[in-house]
Image (tube, rainbow over all chains, first blue to last red; front, side, top):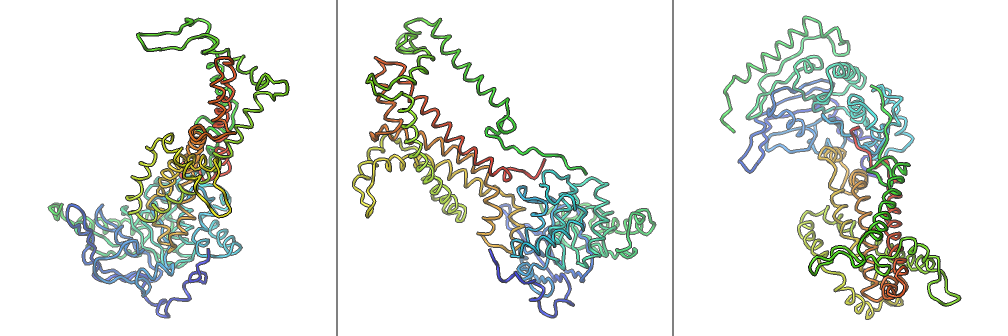
Length: 285
Length: 306
């Protein structure tokens, strides 16, 4: 069960440039899916850079390719052309080095494993000793406020708790980049807001960069340093909106009632609607 | 945000409630009583010659020869197998023959598990193997075992495996495994392919290989499918063993006993029912043993949702 190349922390193997290199650097990415009904142009001319420690949200209507872009970064799919680097390496190498943690809309926990064993899964797969694993999992349980639930099984948890377990799992190997595809999409509004605040606190604690896919404008605004607005058919970046809000570390629920927050929501909404006037691009399908 | 206590489905008869619950056993007993009532009821009121429509017999004769009383069948079990003074009770003969057949069926079942799971792994690994093998696997089950049992026996008799002599029971076990491997191969493949794409992709993001994914994701996920398949396989192995004993003329097992005592039914009708009860018990023991396996593996039968 030992996988020698990953038993030592991957970070030591990354080139010295790794620390200054952007977390994600995409240049002129194209993604075309061949389907039976012809080619689908999923992404067109995507250029994007995410700084270390930066929180970037991808927002846009369905079919704009935001999830596809995230999958490219995660090396779950490969771009048709263009260049994509994660911490100065190609995406495949970054995946092999476990430079990112990932969380999806569905928690995707293994039902036969306890909460602790689910969080420790990536550590176990990469040959971390059980004592080290136990200590790390304990810390992560505290981080997501599930100290008392380590021995529970996923079917005994609420949706919000399952999602917190999934986030803890994505943080298990202390990744410098978190990829999140609508992780709160299936949660009710109250749980969702609490999870957002928790996520900001966790990001401040870990200093990780985040690429966050969502279709909720308030969520993107509340969490992000920058919001990348995308438009569909073909998926491309129509605008990047800088969030002129207080420091993410200081953000709390009172921000949700602040005038600057509403101003940013308006800005993103206008970018969304202005970027894709009605009727444009409809004929491609 | 409260944790509901969960009651995972871990029963011997998982569909109907918690394991070994009183209700489950009660229904079992009621079922047997109903069967007895039906038998004795029809025997009491049915016409002696049975119900015949044209040339077709719809219901059997109710004579003691055709339908012995249920209590006669049971008491016969405790009488001597033969008239001889030193004959052992019938049930001893039946139990020892059942144990003999159970051993053969278990060997066949084990062989079926190895072959079935092996085939499933090959088909999982190479899609092309699935296309190539699956039709043959299905086709294999259409061969009537009565037809090829004697062939297996005569081929086996000519086999020489070094110091190991091919024996009759091995032919029987081989035929039992022939029936057992099919549901296991199909069920195991379905189970191994059952993980969601999200889970498979998660393992991909962890950069782990095929074997680790198999061990940590696919095998645990396959357990519920495997348990059902193993149980079907066990039932098939028992049927295969009994039928193969009969068609290869294997002595010592319940199959032989069924034929032998059926031949004596005209003089001793209740005796023929001894091995039938034995065969039923055999199937229950086989299926029950696999169900015990399910209790041990109960944690793998959880689902993510409540």
